Amino acid sequence: MSDVKADSAAKKHADTASSHTLLEGRLGYHLESALLVRALTHRSYAYENGGLPTNERLEFLGDSVLGLVVTDTLYTTHPDLPEGQLAKLRAAVVNSRALAEVGRGLELGSFIRLGRGEEGTGGRDKASILADTLEAVIGAVYLDQGLDAASELVHRLFDPLIEKSSNLGAGLDWKTSLQELTATEGLGVPEYLVTETGPDHEKTFTAAARVGGVSYGTGTGRSKKEAEQQAAESAWRSIRADADERAKKAEEAAGQLAVETAKKAKEAAEQAAEPATEAAEQPAEESADPSSASA
Image (cartoon, rainbow, N blue to C red):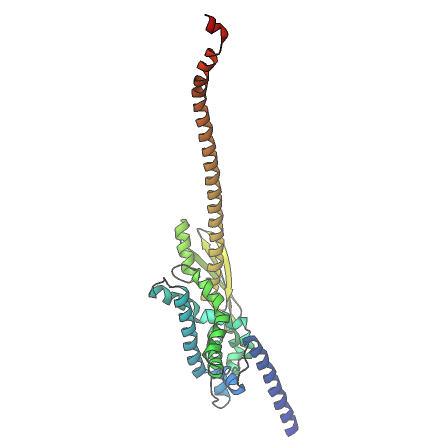
């Protein structure tokens, strides 16, 4: 029996090591094993296994590192933005929903050590757990590799999100941006129709963004807010594309009108010049006539 337990423990250790190697490959850094284990240990697992150290202290550290790097990037790349706008940009990047999406891109949920309760309620895809674990991993990279390495990781994971957020409206979230765009286009106020499916512990929400009775985009998520944000993004892109197309056609029409106007003006100028040309040529023809000279 002891041999079976030993074999099981050895297999579990090997699987864990292989899993960590896969995650480290995605991160681009090899971390001290115990530190990485702690970064991936959710409090639910720690409590169910005798009070093990959790990742919460690393999360606290990683949150500060992430905030510093993102703030420095925004300050440097947007030299003309006031403090209030910079703060909104940072909030659009450093929030649970955004961090969770980055975590999903790394498939971070499959590496987290979760308790049975969280495991059974879809904890591996919960935005709050993914966001907290990602911050803990950033904190672990900082402790193990230093600020330069942690900064490089943050840039690699978050620069696309920073650029994306910079293209949003003043509110720096898709729902606010959509409302601003529909007001500018005179379309009315957006509304969201939300439905939900699945059991209570694993619901999926679907939202449709409608403006003036017309559906412009849909989105899905593990929360109503996430689904509405995705629907707002889809609607914003659709309405913006329509507006850009109309603007392009209007610009082309204006250009064509300018060409036609210039052409007509040139023709009118040429027609107006013809009588003067004929009058200037007439005396020269008369003086050259022999009969006129003999008379």
